[in-house]
Image (tube, rainbow, N blue to C red; front, top):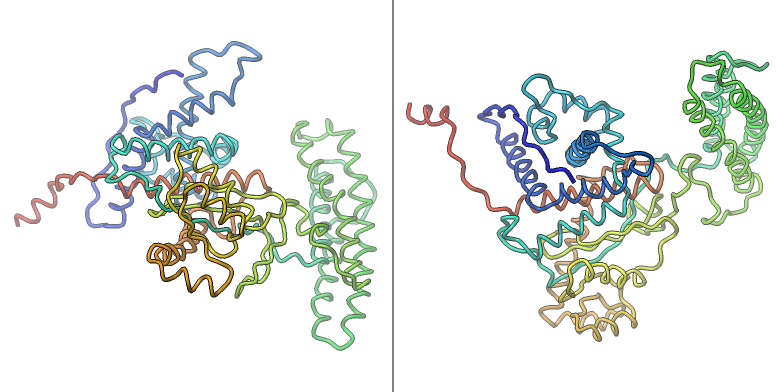
Amino acid sequence: MIPFPQELRPRLPTIVGNVDYLTLRQRLEQIDALLREGGVERDFVQRALEQWNPGARRKVTAREQGKFQQRSRRALRCTILRTLLQEDYRGFSCQLAGNPLYQWFCQVDALDAVRVPSKSEVQRFAHWLPANPMRAVIDGLLQRAIEKPGQLHLREALDLEEYFVDSTCLQANLHFPVDWVLLRDGVRTLMKATGLIRRAGLRTRMEAPEEFLRRMNRLSIQMTQQARRSGGKKERKRVLRQMKQLVGVVRGHARRHRELLDQRWEQTRWTRPQAEQILRRLDGVLELLPRAQKQAHERIIGGRPVANAEKILSLYDLDVRVIVRGKAGAEVEFGNTVLFGENRQGFILDHEIFRESAPADHQMLFASLTRVWEMAGRQVGAVGADRGFACAANHRALAESDTFDGLCPRRPAELRRRMKGKKFARLQRRRAQTEGRIGILKHGFLGRPMRAKGFAHRELALAWGVLTHNLWMLARLRKVKKKAKPKVLLLEQAA
């Protein structure tokens, strides 16, 4: 890896009178130091070079590698800052263009002209590394914070005496999955893509796509109104039959335009990759729409339930699962199960997201402990979790591994007996804070709902959120040197 060059950069302006800005600036300066001194930046760039590897096709020059390393550094810093600010790609690019502090942190500032990454470049930055290398970057940061706290100028090392585990639902960004709404979504996507093809000059004989959208909207309004009328069940069946008939016509028109675009794309202004993007959009909906139609028929006309494993919750995200939470305000959630593990100080030591339906909580405990043991090189002193993680096998395994068992027992009598012990009672009281930590991570670093679509993108966004959260927490642990007051303040105090 080519050493990072030291460039001439403009000095940040002196801001007086805004405490929030000064606090944010101090945190970003501390995170900047952690990225450099903690080896996160170097580790990230090294793994990006391993993923890049264009040398299989041709020899890479030092100039090309240097440019790629610089982009990798900016990818790391831009994505961390965007995750911290909870901005979308376009909004972050706009904020970066007008804020010298953000430009300094992302290393896009310059003496002559500031070249800010575009919205598309910011999106590429968010997918710069896959999820597994990102987990290795996170583990590397945690290892240094455990083994070499002095190198990172931390007031104390990361504590491994107590470990707390809990699971939650990472909600997907989709509307409530009503069966007939899936048919409306499918018609809308197919007709909008068909409209694009027709405006590009490729047409077959059909009515205007907007007419089919109007018909589906009218049927959707009729469907929503039936719940407030007598005999609404019969009317819902009638409206659904009309929807199914309209869906069949729309599918036929979309399929013909799809074949036309595939065969005669050279006659349009699009390149082949651009045409394939529209083809993939059509293929995905054309494949799933018959299943969604059958699902709506079974539930509305047939009155028969559909198993959760067979349900389609979204035409655009097939990795969303039905998660029965049984909590107030969240009886059922739609997304993926995530397991989090934190230490006493609030650092996320382990995380795992499940593509399929997750196993029971007690089956996930020791897999999480094993990952933490491998990362830290030693066992944790005690484990605290709710009663969902308690079972005979886990109690026995914790006793054999000489780890204090702070799992909440399932039997109330056993819980009352164990609450008499001071250490167990303290672990149970501290365990309640893990719910708050999950809320901080989801609301402050992941977004609610998370904007990422697809399991791979959600898994990657989760890794970025955990890395940014841990960097923010480590910045609060760093020893801060008191800076000299600006001359403006000294003059004001003298006056």
